[in-house]
Image (cartoon, rainbow over all chains, first blue to last red; front, side, top):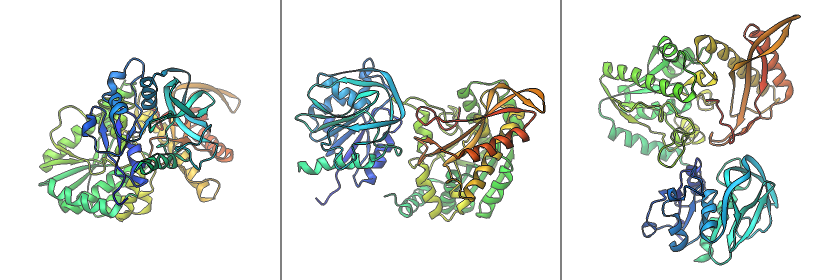
Length: 192
Length: 317
C-alpha cells in the first residue's frame, strides 16, 4: 500500500486525546483529531480511535456526540478507549457504570486472549489507567484482558472490527502501548 | 518521527508572514519560551523584545541567571521587577485556581504595559500542548488553569502568538537543541509559569516563598550531586513543596513546632503522565538532613511524595 493509513482520533474530551494522535503519527499513520460531533459521512479515515473523556458514561452520554453513529455506520475498525469502550459496550447491549474500585495510574494488565491487539506481547505487563467508570457486561464481545480491580480491560467484537481498551496505550508509562496501537492500525491493512 | 528542522523552517516562515511590526515575548528562561523567542527572532530579528518578569516566585538566583543566558543568545532582554505587585495581589489568597488566575492576569497586565511602551501589537508566549489540554474547555475538564491559557483575562490588548502550541516538552527539547540552545537550557527541568507560588500550598507570602525557594535549591543541588556521582539517573522534574500544616519535632532537646516540606520528584516524557522517582534512600536522607538543618527555624519535617500522575499532578496546585 503506497499511501499512509488514515486513523483519526475522535475527541471525547480526554486528557490524553492529543497523545493518541501523537503516537498514531509515530507509528506511521496519517492522523488528525476530530470533534465527536463530526458527521460520519464527512470522515475519510480508514479507522477511528475514540478517546476517553471526563463525561460519565451513564448520565452524560449526550456529550459524546455522534459516537453511536460511528459504531453503526463507519466502514472500518474502531478502537474505543476508556469512555469510548464503555459507550461501545452499552451500545451493543452491555452495561457500564461506576467502578467499585477505580484505577488511577499504575495497574497490571493480564492478557487472556492475544487476538489482534496483543499480538506478540507478554501475558502480563504494566499499564496506566484513569477511570471512574468501567464496563460491567459486554455481550457480543470477547474479553481479551483484565486487571486485579477491573474484569474487562480489553474487548473485541465477535463479528465486527470493533475493539475496546479500558487502559491507555497512548500513555508513555504504559508498557507496549505503542505496539498495541500499531497492532490496531495493522487490522486496517488486513482488511484491504 | 518528529522532524525538528522541518518544523523550524515552517514556523519561521509562518511567523514572518504573521507578525508585522514589533513583538514582545514573555520569557522565563525555560526551554519553551526560549525556543519560541529564537524562532520569532529568526523570523523578525531585532523587533523582538524578551520580557523577563521577576514575580518574586523565582528560584534561587534565577532572574540573574536567565537574563545572562538570554543575552548570551543574542536576544533583547528587559527585566521587570514585579515582586511587590505579585505579593500584594496574592495577599490572603489560598484557593489554587484563584492564585493561578491572579498570576495569569497580572502577567498579562505587565506585558500590556510594556507592549504599549514598545508599540508592539504581538505578544508571543511559550505555550505547549499540556498547558491548553489541562486548562480545559469544551468537553475537556479543567485540571488546572495554566497561567498562559486558562489564567488569561477575557480582555487582552494584543494578539497572542504561540509557536509551540501543539508540541510536547520532549519535542520542544529537540527543537531547542536544533535551534542551537546550550544543553543547560534545552535539558532544563520544567518550571511552572506561576513559579514557586504553586509550590506553596496556601498563601504565597514573601516569607513562604523564601522558605520554599531555599528548600527547592537544596533538593536540586543534592539530586544533581547524586546524579553526577552516578547514584541515580536525572529525574524529569524535582523540587520541594511547602505545606500549610505544622508538625512537632525536637531540636537540641527543645520542642519545635514547624512546617512540613515535601520532596517531589517524577519521571515523565511529556508531563501528561508521570511516575514518582525511585530515589535512593541515602540521597533522600541527605536532602532531609540538609533541609532540616538549614531551615531549622521554619521546617520541622521532610516527607517524600510517592504519588504518580494520575492520580496526582506533578505540581501541587
